[in-house]
Image 1: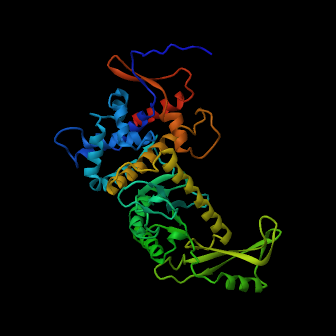
Image 2: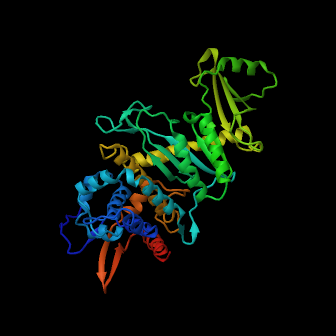
Length: 453
């Protein structure tokens, strides 16, 4: 072991060089002119600097307003994100509180501008499915904010006190269209048609092909299905859906008895004591689907006579599941079930918000401010996703197993928290990375592409 002498160096070092990418992306969407022209201030820190500061914190996995105090004397933070000034934590908090409701639409506009941008002359690849449809996965998830007196905190479906934000993801790579905060007690389907009115046109503007909306049984509502159909008609786009059926009071035993008695029903044996059958039926739902793509429901009935521990059951146990869809008839019932199973990937995106970005517990006691924080978090996630997809999947990227996308945590570890030295020479600013830095090539290349765009 070597005994080191700790020394303070006479030049600037940064442990978060990846903020240089964040500044470049925000410059590309012209955030300064977008914000300051609509929300000018007479004196003090510009509102554009308030938003850029907070987005910088979110991209480093920090949402607490007090975290800005660590960057007030950081020259690199100021130059990387493009700030005229760094606010104090009280100023950051007060400005977000004062403008929260006014900035809801602004945050959504910034997000759309970011996702509409071209990288190296190409539009963003959101990740279409092999069947040709681009998924739009939507769901709510619980944020545990127990032990606080924050506005509209309530008992969630997960059994904790907190919030249940509504998230919409476009494509299989996890780009977030919307993260709308909701009270903890609000049901998943309640007022979701208003989220559809915003998210589906945004998705249609970003992707040229057909869209496939996927949702769990909490959204099994004819009203929501009618809204999706109405949006497809209004946007003149093909927007199909797969929504898991909520059986509610369906007579499962009666349906199972009819299937068992029907000798024409094809059963598939999964293992000894377990078999299943799949079938479908047409639905006549007013205002849902079209003549060419009528609504139908796919069912799967599982019968168990021996449980997973090998215990023989006295009576058969039946589990009935269903999925309502407007996909064309060329998709078989088994394919529809497989497409819905792929919907489960979105749970990983929830996890990235809650754990990777540390957004489980929101920073403010005011609901509107926390709502704005969630909207900015969606923008921050997309910033990190773009950085990761355009660097960490390259052949000369730091060694990683092959994957279609990188977790937000990986992007932070490999790129955001990269050590660098800021140098001024001959009137120009340089960002120096270490001689042994394995990520130098992809870092330098992607930054150059953003500079020339």
